[in-house]
Amino acid sequence: MIKEIKKQDIEQGLQEWYIKEYPGDELGPEINKDINFYNLFKALDNRRNIYDYIQVGDSIVRERLFSRLAIIMQVEYNYIYEQWLNSRN
Image 1 (spheres, rainbow, N blue to C red):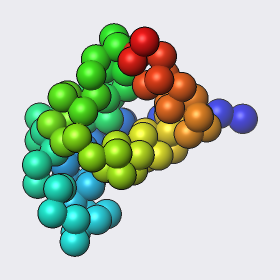
Image 2 (image 1 turned 90 degrees about the vertical axis):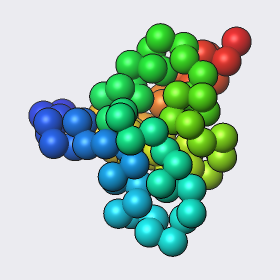
Image 3 (image 1 turned 60 degrees about the vertical axis):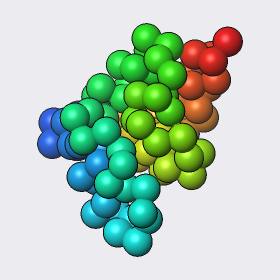
Image 4 (image 1 turned 135 degrees about the horizontal axis):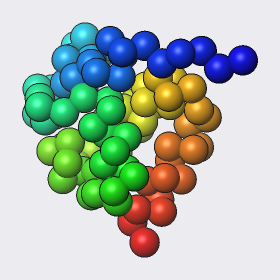
């Protein structure tokens, strides 16, 4: 059974969430503060360059954001990862 996606989760800002979850990571404040998890999902759909979009070129940051996005969207991490891989072709 699929649960309803919580509005506060999908609309939470990437930077806000990341800094809260990983306060010791110096890259957190560099994440684009104007985008949320819904924006990230749509950026993947639109084949945007995710590193440029989030304004951080670190794969660990990307993986952490993708992991959270997968939880919010109620899909396996591989679904999000494959979506990203497909956008790079």
